[in-house]
Length: 327
Ligand code: GLN
Image (cartoon, rainbow, N blue to C red):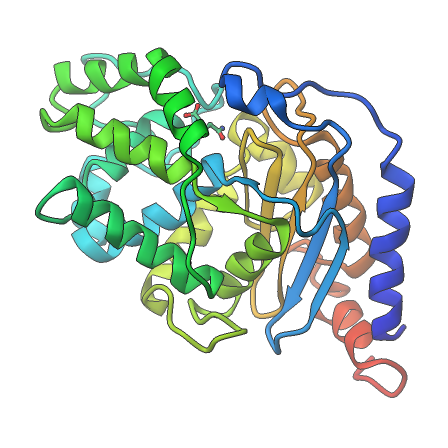
């Protein structure tokens, strides 16, 4: 199979899955309810900088929970692995992403940085003198991953800030139990801002490819995060990135991933590629319905599952190299 076939395979998947109308838009954030349910884009970026974009690849949307991966990387850099682990665990919850259930007197820290409680706690640890400095550091970090300046969608930020009572409740509970410090309004603002960063599906694939490439953006060559942190980031994505579907995702698709309620999913094929899908209709876990189908098909086609030991690298590399490749 040659490169043209990778593009054709993505194109076919797009055509096949486009009519799917299952799922719901995320309505609990009023701005997200304005999304067009037909939007559907796919992007795959390889480590030698080739891009395969299909469908609504230029459509912008807010990054939402996918931001948690990258802010976690920043917290690892700011705070150090062992210190951070004392504040935010790495245990999957099996509960929905916005659950408050496990925030009680016995839980010393939020379970993991991929659910809202853990993400708010992680964001509260980002260093900087004042809120504007912390926000600027965060935007600079996203810029390294995306390869261009990124901006915040003000309407979404304000929408979440006005209606994010559940996230506020989590922050208050964590403060009550001594899990985060008292500046919760600043932490929540920064959290709502990170969720409101505007991207398109190609940007997300570049960000995923950067993680696949030991933290180096394959298009710009810039180091976006210290390579020593990538293993930790990918481990947490693998075990916790798809919320209470994480186990089934690991079983079916088998690569580190993260989804967001605006309909994005990113996945990292270590040492090979970054892949992203955008389609805003969500299932009951808050994961993109078309997105799940795309990744299942891709994983099967190219043997991406980390434990697909014989098919693994071979099929995809053969596809990239075309006839005469390694397999
Ligand atoms: N901003 C959203 C929230 O806090 C992010 C949730 C998500 O994408 N799963 O509820």
